[in-house]
Amino acid sequence: MAGIAKRFRTGTKRWSMAASAIMFGGIALAACGSPAKTTAQAPKASKAVQNLAVEVETGKMDGKAGWPRFVPSSLTVKANQPVRLVITSYDDGTAPLPSALVTYDKVAGGTETVGGVALTSVKNSEVSHTFTVPQLGLNAVIPAAPSNGSVKVVFTFTPTKSGTFTWQCYAPCGSGSDGMGGAMVTKGWMTGSLQVS
Ligand SMILES: [Cu+2]
Image 1 (cartoon, rainbow, N blue to C red):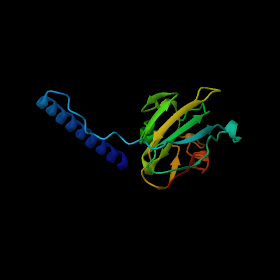
Image 2: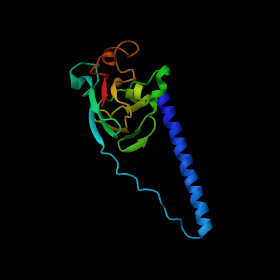
Image 3: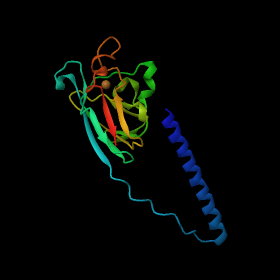
Image 4: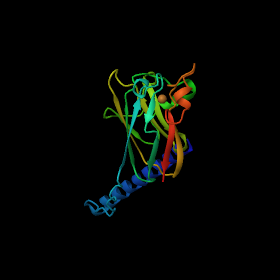
């Protein structure tokens, strides 16, 4: 959460700098009567995008009834370079977030498209899984796939901290009365690692 707040502050600062630049440009324009020449440097070429592909398999596919899993569950990326994580989910089951975790229906720390459409949250009743890295403030939300079909979620983010972090699904898609057992607490299923080097 602190990370998100920090990013927000940075964003605000950048915006106000941009606003000052616009105002300054306006004054220059008024003074000389012709468009002010821009002296700003062209932005540097963007860094190469790191592409990652993950599948969410259902119990039918992985051979363990009621145990959905992310494949692969161990991911490795470089810090300070954008990551394009493509999550293809075949799971048509929903697992709405419980009230204590309901804010995880919102995308955080990056941008998301579902089936090519940008969105900032998924209706809780349609949530199937999340890909959440609490230590990096990342949250991708995966809606249920159509039955016998798949849904493609593209989550783009840039990790700025290096280390080995745990990712976790926060949607109660596991076993037990609260859905938080089984796959949810088993490494390699609904939790795994994100190594940022
Ligand atoms: Cu899950």
